[in-house]
Image (cartoon, rainbow, N blue to C red; front, top):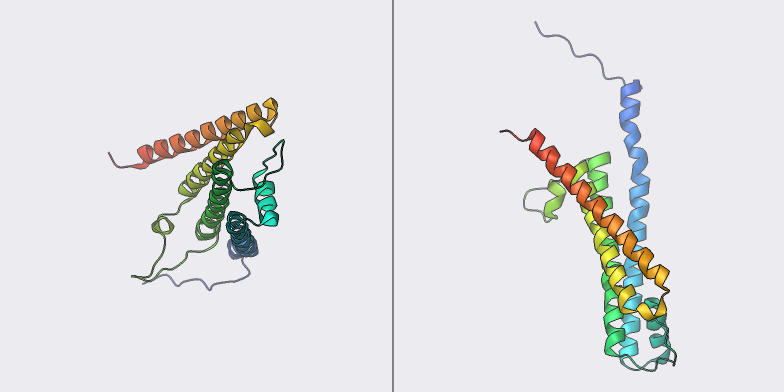
Length: 197
């Protein structure tokens, strides 16, 4: 004789606590809006870059301001040096947008609700394997990537920064790198402890 299933009470403390995860859904929706802002920012940077290449002085001023470049004489044209800094700025915007995407999709899937993907439907491979540890590792490595790019931009443009700023950025980058390595090491130890021998 089978034991009868107790009636499902939607007001039980356990159900209320479990349902509270949906309070995070508006935060992920707002992160999507932030990602849209980054798309608009990227398009604006790209348009200014193209206009500056065609000789538009106003667009050139925007590009110079975006990359934080200061020169003793006014900048009148796009040089190879400015191109490198402007492209690095575009790449940095994309990397931050990637971090947002990891947090939106991975965070929602891990902490709120699974995202069903029909067989044959296109989706990033990492979405199917999202876990708390995997999400932390991807975020840590992504932050190190953004920090690396930011540090490269700063050192290329080092003449415009005080020595203490250069040292502070380098020190912060080392701290972020060590943190990411620690997260990766913990993830590896976790897999070794739980993998069948």
